[in-house]
Image (cartoon, rainbow, N blue to C red; front, side, top):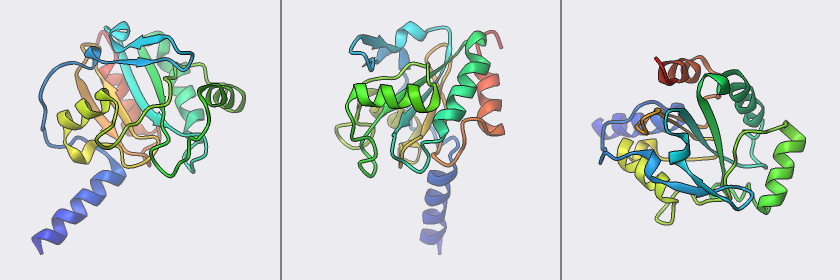
Amino acid sequence: MSRILAAAAVVAGSLFGGQAGAAGQGGSAHAFAFTSIDGAPLPLSQFAGKAVLVVNTASQCGFTSQYEQLQAVWDTYRDRGLVVLGVPSNDFGGQEPGTEAQIKDFCETTFSVDFPLTAKEQVSGAEAHPFYQWAKAEKGALAAPKWNFHKYLIAPDGRLVDWFSTVTRPDSDKVIAAIEQTLPGR
């Protein structure tokens, strides 16, 4: 019976998100860098002093409409110190097969996205980008992406504050409350 309850907890957590038990190693998200979708260096340290919502994205996913919600959150909170950072990934279902140029064009023309995007990255497994490996170590395996549009919230000091699963909309009360609590100057 306890195995069934444990399995149910894992499934519920992976679907609905939330803070996992602290498995953390410490450190800061600011220690990691991506490459921008245009090929330029994109160190997370450039966002020191701001909250950052990091989201692995895909253009051919049933959750792709979350780009619209992410843009709305960016529009609402960017002047208050939030950065939305999209991380295109083809890890789940092969739903981001395009090149960086195709991904950027799709995001801009379909959803008028103007928040920063990285180059396409692996976000799961042994070959995951080091940021995603760190986030998993910080919050535990339950907090690792299980599908596209998984979200991590980073504090202005680089701490990993929380995570939200695919099914948790970026404009949900839960995500908005966490963002408002994490914005600089709070």
